[in-house]
Amino acid sequence: MTMNNHNNTRKWSLWVEPWIILLVVLSMSFGSLTFTSCNHNNYSDDVKLVFSTDTLMFDTIFTTVPSITRSFTVVNPGADPVKLDVFLAGGDQSYYSINVDGVAGKEFHDVEIAAHDSIFVFVKVNINPTNQNNPYLITDSVLFYNTHRKQSVQLVAFGQDAHFIIPDHTNSSMHYYIVAHEHEQVHWTNDKPWVVYGWAVVDSLGTLTIDPGTKIYFHHGGGLWVYRYGNIHVNGTVEEPVLFAGDRRESFYDTDYEQWDRIWINEGTSTNTIDNAIITNSAIGLQVSSLTEYLGNKTIVNNSVIHNNKMLGVLARASDLEMNNCQVSNNGSYSMLLQVGNFTLNHVTVANYFSQHARKEPAFALSNHYVENDTRILGNTTLTCNNCIIYGNMGVDADELGFSSFEGVELNYDFHNCLVKNNMLDAHFHNCINNKDPEFVSKFGQNYNIKETSPAIDAGKTGLGITTDILGRLRNGVPDIGAFEYYPEPEEKRAR
Image (cartoon, rainbow, N blue to C red; front, side, top):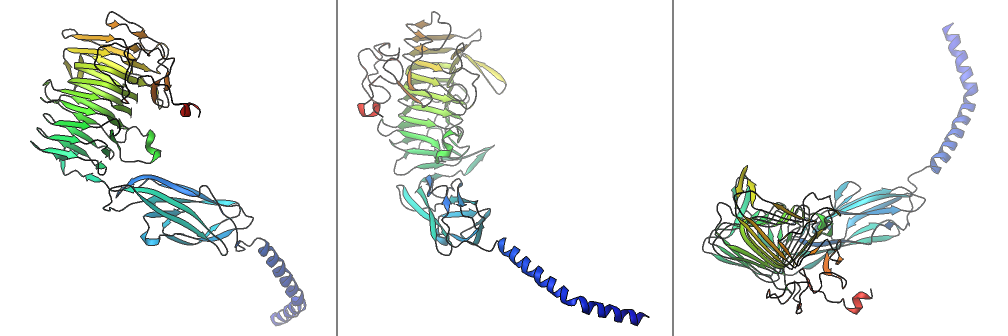
């Protein structure tokens, strides 16, 4: 019975087998057609890719300091997918490295981009040390090959060798290198930039002199510390100022206002001088403060710009500070905070239009006390302020001048021929202009030259002996208030 069933089944299967074969053939044919129409291996061999840029630019990169990562997109505008070979033209010898759609390397094969889709290419550049003193050009290209077409994106960076200051001491959490030891006189020249990791320290009785045109760049958290009884002379000129800035030179970092820490000058018996300097993108631009005791030394700052700092432009504590023809601007807290000591300001423009967050502190503050290590320190304080502008964007009714005084010590101040944003002018203000817009050329563009309609023009005090402005231009018989003397813009500049 079992055998008979088996035979019957076999006869039936033989009878239907031709139809099964026919169905299988038809099914395979239809499947083949369907698969062909959706076949992702049908790559285009001549598609013109679209790039978000034809040239990827990097600003000055210091040797051995890796750049930030930049990127561009590669778009396949065609109706079919494309398969590519992607590689750096410089190969293993290239200063550049790339990451193609999440994979790092120098050379990539069979990179697929679907129809109407795109991929990212990320690029970094790292420049090895050379003996060249001047900026040099580092170029390469990212090549894209398919069967019948070759395309590329150019890579361009300016590399530069530098003097590197590398810390070899650690004190608590501070890493530092002594650049001028006791009784040692050290020159920093402008042959190539100085790049500082950690803190560069001028030790007691040491002297650091910085030549015109020198550029000093600080790695994150670093700074310049003139220790007690140390001495510094920054000898910039109008034509060749000395620059203190962060070491990340890509334009992406222009608004990173805390790339490094500060210039910090302690007490001593000799005068420190800073002439024609630009101090920018630090936590605090310049701090002049006694470390253990007030010794009466003076720091004199002339024709300098201190701006774009995360907290303060200038902090002075238990010290003597004189500033002439200076601009202190765009700082996240106070632009100037003067606490205990003797201070003289002539033709200083304090302009705080910081825009990354709302300020709670005035642009300028003076007090006869401060708190350090939970201890309140009091001291006699004197300020003389001549021909200065103190203004900002805190609001219509907000003062940009602040005063704080404790009894038992003196707080003396006099403002002569100043333009200030302050709601009360008492007997300490002489011939001052109150709450009138100084009419800067561009307050948010940080051009603090004054317009021809500015109330600061010809409103200054005479007899100060300051015959030029911050740009070296002659002041007339009745000087303008602020660091900048008014000069009409050249015709060709106004025509733009």
